[in-house]
Amino acid sequence: MKKKIIFWAKLIILIIISVFFYFYFKQITYNQNIKKASSPNQSEWFTEIEIANTPISREKGLMNRSSLCKSCGMIFIFDKSQPLNFWMKNTQIPLDMIFVNEKNRVVSIHENTIPFQTSPTYSSQSEARYVIETNAYFTKEHGIAIGSTIDIEKLISSSVSYKN
Image 1 (cartoon, helix red, strand yellow):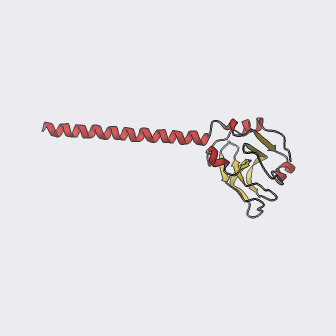
Image 2 (cartoon, rainbow, N blue to C red):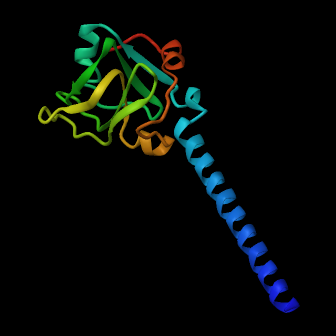
């Protein structure tokens, strides 16, 4: 009888310890994923980000450029949130397009867009106020995903004038 009680006690303790470690390691993985998605070093993403906030600069974007430095990009700022559509007309560089809403959340990403493509367009799929264009694979390299938070104000404050 005593052996059965000891056996069951050990089994219950083993189950409790297993459950504890399961949830403990699951929480660590979850926290690492959140950290990766929020990318705390966003200020180090870009050495130069241009701002396109007028109709003319937004229309022209990165057209007719043959290159973009690895840590360069362009942020398009619209007056209000709305469904947005972009194309690659006269754009020679494959890009990642990151659509961001007013709450600084990434709502859509188009990776490695096709140069010179005018149809189909790349859509935000929901309302967005900002679009960040970067070199292709930038989002993978920096762990940016739908739902990630991007500090738009920091990007805007570190931006340079539109050059095109």
